[in-house]
Image (cartoon, rainbow, N blue to C red; front, top):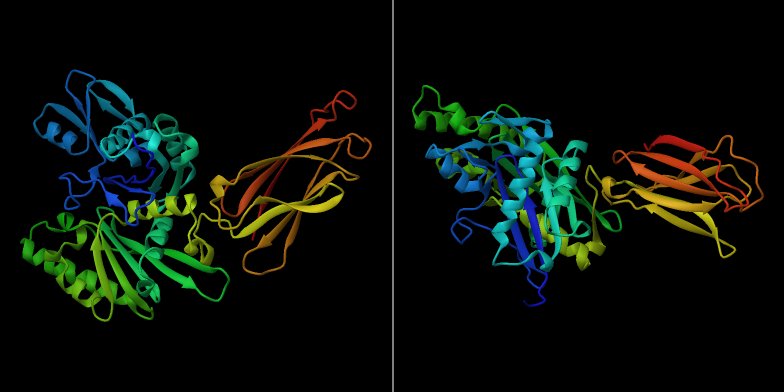
Length: 427
């Protein structure tokens, strides 16, 4: 087997998941498809258990087996797993989280013949949101897939959107960009913009929802398809017109089955007036691939632009320590990093103090803020005879917990067993 290395982007969605991949030397990622081309993309996020035996099918095969009555279909795997739910099948309860792990493992098998686990340099899972429950599920998946954990990372659709767009021709994002995602969950999306008054330039992706719009299948009751499509098209057109009002949007991306031409003609025609419009379904998984490649081999784009999404730290966190007789700044967490990837542990020797001082430097140019963790009750010892272990654990993009423990100093000054914990919020 050759030494080619691949990056893989896995869009884990509650209804239709997608996998894109790329060799590091390739510019554009490809997407796994049902028919060997990018005509029919996506893998239904479903499993099917064959009746009477512990045999599971996934994706399109799961749907086929269920239609014949030979098995029981389970869907909405991500949503049910997030809720901590179970599926009752043939009198037995199956944990949704375990089934989600099974689905991901089986789905990654679609890369067989393209690459092998040892050739994957980076695997990125992207999801709609990264709350604590989702992070817990993704970490469980990480433990079960054949790719090493240190090569796996997570991101939100907002970040995937940023990385996809920033790798398109700059002419497409000179003005703001709107990504509309019209799926079974309704019509929502992301608005991409660049602040060019900073160095590096800062990219933002704001999420939005168009209320009151559902998928056509839900809206068809009692009317002919033509009547229903026309009415829905009019409703969407009005709300999209309101959304565009006052915004400088030059490019539009349309994702999801809801933008099929037969029921969105007027809306799409309006969007094309003075704007460039693209239609597709695999933006998120391809964006995850671009993100993976940028991490492995930072490009000029990585130097000139930084993404500050909802899950990114908007500040640098560090502290000053004495090293080789001189004061030196020690970085704990850097602005622009995902909060859930920034947990850090540092050992230090105290010198004439009973507190730890942390320095917060906002990325927006505001004055630095000093935060202190007081070590009350710490035994009195000579300078540099107390070793403290400090653990910083982020809870969100604006808050973290600082935990300190007294390790003493060898056999001369044994550890006291004292521990301190302080929750801190930034901004």
